[in-house]
Length: 535
Image (tube, rainbow, N blue to C red; front, side, top):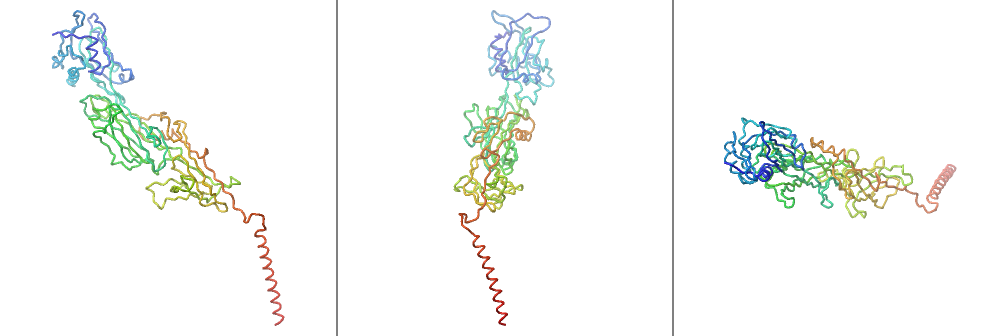
């Protein structure tokens, strides 16, 4: 039975849509020879690197033989004969006459051919270079037999290709990959940023966006897991939503997912995992997760931030199975402030004043409640959180022997230092002192609201989350300033002698008192002598 095939129509369509190839080109029929000289070259698509081909192993199986002939202006394949172990597909191959290779029957044929391969089936050839040579005319099935776990791309779909002796068939693999990005949802304007600033006790909201690879509709044993690991300064507080989409425009709640949310909720430095169901993996192209954490009392303050990293692990086999590939960690970072105050003599700024007491407020007119702090063992005042004991929380901050107060855990912004007690011998400062706390980072270009305008891009980490987080901390340092300086200097004036308007003051009273004492002593002596004489 003769089957007619149009080289650049039916055969190209087979390569592109049924079997994952973008193009199949066949040259004009050439003369045969005693040794077969047909060939197949596999190449990566323009969006992929050559490693998508060269890092993997391909096996070639001959499914059928045919003769090539010319009938009028058409090239036809005659005497089509399925070979062992594909003989059961004879009728299916013949039935493809006139059909496009994206048809349901053509897709079914490719999958059926692959299903007949067993450990006893000998491959015609194998390659790691992506090319096969010395082929006779016939139908061939290309199966990717070894796919690296470090390959982000899915394994190649089964490729069924027609080869004519003396001609080269070029197939461009078409597969898919996935990745994940993590962002902080800015509390200022809801924009997505890689860094922000908050106060200890504040909530940070994160958004994870990831692609889902394109799998076969009947793929099984699929794995798709997002792993989010926080640093010790962040306490995981919950997953807000897990949604899926096909166009990034319309989002629906995932039908089901497996997470360890309940086990790690309210845990500092938690590792949160979210795994999609097989139905969502096959049906949708994108996933978005929103989750929250609180900056806790153990948060890094000042120049060192509090990072959070995420990676995606997914099956990189088109037909499913195994955990497969893990992406590099993607990291974001949250900073919290450091505010330094030093108390000095107004006349001699090198004279540091111990014992001054302050309250830190958010308003200058005392209409706001003083911010509560906990004094740490090193003398630092750390912003209090709800879990702190009420007995440990203070609002009055006292300068040490160096005249200093160090306050940590504040967001950037304007604060006011209100003096409640002056150092001994000094007058109280009655005006609230304005403290403008600002932050900067050259690499991230933090805005006036403390949000990054650039991404964390100077490193990638394929190892563990701890390395990713610590690398971010050491790479991206923040600089905190108050009023454009590394510290706020507040002066106190020494107390003065009163009254201070030019009178003789206490001098008169001092000498007058001494005169009275002397006079009394003289009178006592005179009186005593008189008494003796009378006796």
